[in-house]
Length: 546
Image 1 (cartoon, rainbow, N blue to C red):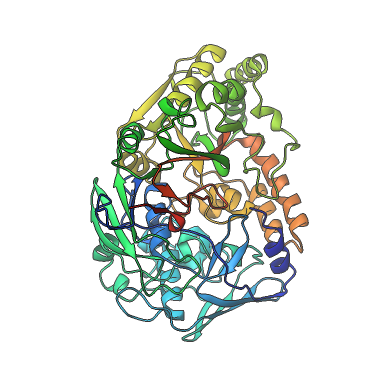
Image 2 (cartoon, rainbow, N blue to C red):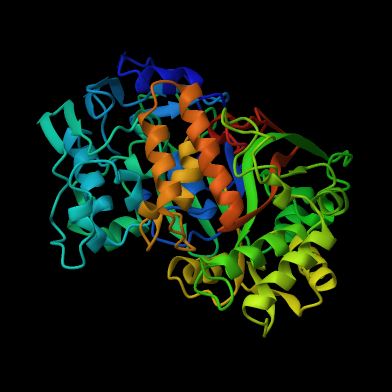
């Protein structure tokens, strides 16, 4: 997951010509019980939104979109960047101008060609706030972005910084230096779309036409999403299986039971009840490796007593210091998670254990009581503190443990708030309707500190335009992110990212908890299990014996 090589080349304004090289993804197809097929059934959850790449920001939809679409670049298991549809991405003018050359011959699964318009039209659609796409902020550094965020914007308005030169050439002008632009270009937000997507977006979201390793077959809501290997795919993620069947579960325990019973081939969601036993279960193959996912919980600033002010900051710091992360990791995660020391994951180059202010991530009950008392002197506490989570995931035990620590340390009423499904939970998060704190976390879209920090905490990602669901806004933090994107080297950029993190450690818009390992289990018939730079499974590599 080291991003040094690519970032330093881009930041220096050098011409970049990135060669294709492998990195994996996934897809799905029909009946995994057919003995004569190599179709892999895998754990899935119901996507929160229709399958538009630019509106996909959660795991249920992300797994599917990753397998269906191919972007300009892909990432390997170490975070290296390699061209996919792009032939070259060339930077000039201090990373404020990029020229993208596309490979010829790519086409969508409806037979139409993938051209420069396929990318530019998709980017314009996602960036335009009238279309309410959750990844709009990924385009915030392109000229014209601010105009597309106005409340009365024309739905057909476009980014002034994008020009289609010809079918295979895109000219990109930025409003500020952005050395991470070529790295971001492999994320969901930057995937191309065919003309049919804009003619009938509602239909497309339920039956997408794509250009990736797999071809969409069907989506039976709350049951399964199926796809088969795309014979016309021209990239470096060629599937070794015939397709994937994402079986949709509302309980990881049910999926794990199906796995042990031979009714599911693979899961990368191990339930809490199996964490102590899955690695010793002789009926399965188990996997446990370092990963890039982070676990947090967000305390939105619209909650009473938790504004972006002295009282709010004191309370967030007190709550953070009430939590014994090490003990919870040992007793609940059983060696599959490590306590957080910053807002990043260990494989990211800016990750640091030495940040000023990181003592707020350490268990210190006496200091927590002191900070809570200072907050009470500003405004006396009233009410209860709750943390919401989706009950169809694996958060129940750790959320309840955290609430117990907060209750016992601060002597307040703290409780967990289960919401029945991921869909219900994420709908409330995305719409800003949460009336409590809520579990959060991040599986990276691209291997850069930019993805963990800018996309989650920058002002440009707030107000429904990105992953900043708590609407945190601090101009000092934003300024540090701008400096990082303008830095002439990775080392220099990392210094600014770390200074930005030190601001976050004071404000704590989200409370860092743990970095999660990549854990998975499969039947004995499955082979080829591998993980990407963020700890996600490489679905294209999976295969199984008949």
